[in-house]
Image (cartoon, rainbow, N blue to C red; front, side, top):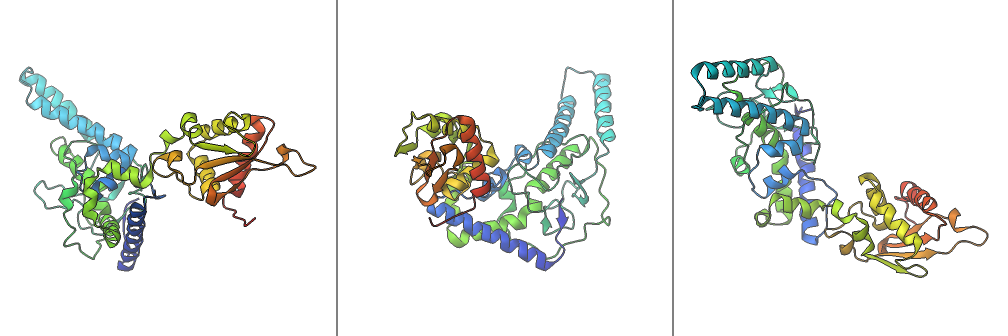
Length: 371
């Protein structure tokens, strides 16, 4: 849940963590590696200077994104009613009254969705940032991570009007204060009505996408600048930067994509039943088990950009000889991680293969031996 950082020391510690993360990202970009850091698309868009919009809220918090979308629809309907020549005055008045009642029933105030103690600026002409009396807001470390947020509590009936926050609006980060105001009940949030609904959604979107995480974003960018010129990232879109950093994994995990880039040696060919069973199993793994398997095979939980085709060395599968007196079904697979060299016993059926592979990646993924 968004909250004020308790002290200057806490803010400096968080900034140091984010700056270190920025350096790691910069080094990964320089070396052509993916980073095991699922940055949310809005953070990537901010880094490349791409405008942020209403659709980016759902990438940070899907529940709040849906809520804001519903309110945005009410605001847009209200604006359309005011300029619809086909409606008579009584008809327009009746429908507007219905919309007013809908907004009133939601009992919304100018506070950050999911964090009612964080008061938003409700004056239309007020200077940004939108969070009143607050600098150095902390989102619990999840606001920059794809598909997660500090709080998923929806804001009453949902939210919405248009004006999305823009990366350019945060400028170069000059003038950031080094003090954090109390987020208690000292500031009473204004009531949200149909007349200021559009402003509320605009303020909420900007607070979630920019103001609540601005110190972390600036520290992340500073870390990048320690390693490489950040302006060079402007050649990319936010989605391209996200793909470069995190990789787009699903497209690499089809049977065809895996089988095309498996090298088979020493007792196995691509037509061997055990190899076909292995490929089928790999294509059915969920995200968690993919990470376990990749750690077991390569030492990294993510594929490089380009998937199995980009693995160097290539994934090689060889037949593992059974120890005298034991059957192949009694052995576990093993892997020479540096060479991505999987030694797979000649299992008797696919069920045994799946059982043994899952046992190996779950129990031995972090075990490294020198044998």
